[in-house]
Length: 216
Image (cartoon, rainbow, N blue to C red; front, side, top):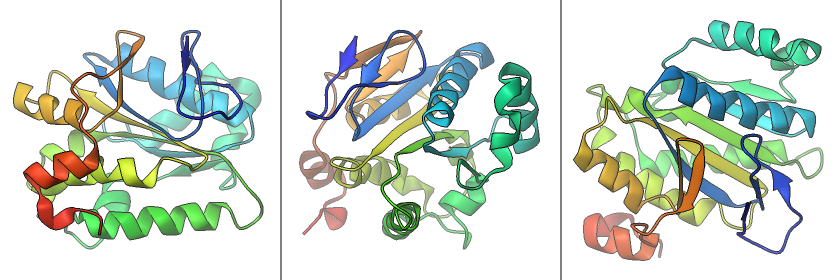
């Protein structure tokens, strides 16, 4: 199945038989470690094979655990995770709240800086994925998480970028998952990707829920 977001060439997502174009924002919904890892490892390894840049934020597993498991799964590529031109492994704090407070506007700036830096030596495709359970902690500003998720739909389109935001269905409430659905154009659950009927364009979602964060 092909997930069409543009007229660019088809690219393998790395799990199932799915292909896609760049400029894709997916909510990865899972209930156990096996489902989570099927997304993470397949997605990042496919990017590794294509010489893309992998941005990964592990939370339910440590960076060391990821590196060990990646090497076990893909022994010929085990040294790639130590190459900053191929992998960027960031903690939740370093990526989302380096100053102790989560801010959607600071995230805008941080992701733009990361993207611009990634393109300095020529166009390079970026695959980003993160385990979002960090957001269940009492972090100042975390109530604006879905503002950030909605605003990603301004940032990602037109860029050589795919984001998969990973949400553990056993830890997030039904209300929270509904907000996740409203801010992600596509979902993957049980190995199946669907176009999300609950998705709202950021102009509409932000106008209704956080008008102060609308793009102007």
